[in-house]
Amino acid sequence: MFKGLFGSDKRGKILLYLFTHGEAYPTEIATVFQWYLNAVQNQLLNLERDGMVYSRLRGKVRLFGLNPRNPFSKEIKAILEKMLDFISEEDKEKFYRPRLRPRRSGKPL
Image (cartoon, rainbow, N blue to C red; front, top):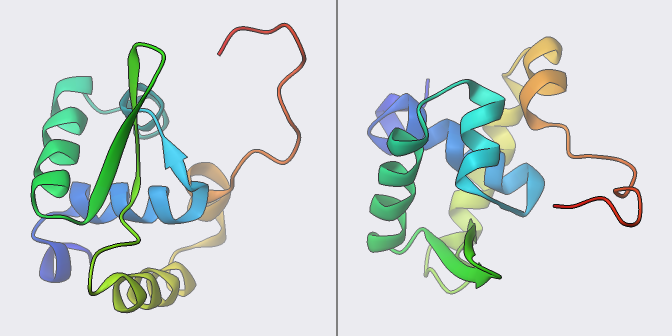
C-alpha cells in the first residue's frame, strides 16, 4: 500500500509512525517494527534529505519528526490520515498507538 506513494513500504510505515507519534528515535522505530536499526536510519536520512522529515539532537541522540515546513506537509498528513483508516485495528494497536501515560519519573529515556 505504501510503496506506490512513498517508494517503499518502510518509508511509508516510518512516515505513518512519525505522524501518529509526533517524534521518534530511530531505535524506537526499529524496535517496534523489528527492523535493523541501520535500515531505519538510512530511510530516515533519505526522508530528511528529501525534506519530508526533520531531525534534532536530544542529548546525544537524533530525534525525527514530520517536517512542518515542507510545502506539501498538509497533503502528506491528509494522505497519512487516510491510510490510517485502511490499516487493521490489530496493526493500529501494535504499531501506531502512541503511549497514553507518561513515563515514570526517574526512569531513563
